[in-house]
Image 1 (cartoon, rainbow, N blue to C red):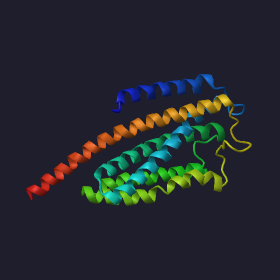
Image 2: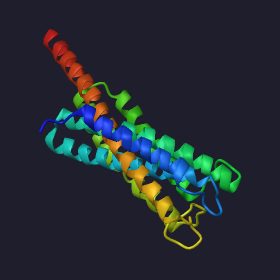
Image 3: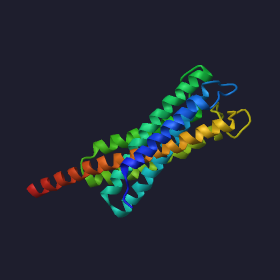
Length: 226
């Protein structure tokens, strides 16, 4: 059965609209945080999307080193780009949350700091790509860097567990007191967010693939001319 991009996008749009409406208008306020808890419905899915896209990017980077297929490099780069974007959104959402709960936008909490390190690591990934002109060498060097940079993902995830942190936890006493409806709103936004992320990955990949094909043709043309 042929993949229908328009149908997928339609389902994704409906799912996201329902999830956003549920999070903003149906789910109740939290006892201590009040209406601020609604930020969490979008902050957590963004963080999850960051981790998933960067892990996918590293996995395809490994596959590229094995198979040397430029399509894998294009997919890896596309996922890394979305991971960088989602990481920025996560940092901004976390800063808003921190200011409302702790009174400052940034206080070098372990989760904040580790996520910033993650974001800077992948910002460096794109600076590295821009610094290497040769297409094949750029893909190989970037893949190796990507495999090292992905180590910041587990660091970000466990940072508030292994170091003292004010970051809220879902599973411990004293954490967020989420009711069944609030959990439902969170899950809806996680699922709809992942659907949208899948669509973004596919579109970014197609654009990057076209760009890489053009660069390969230009490189071949230059070699032929020489």
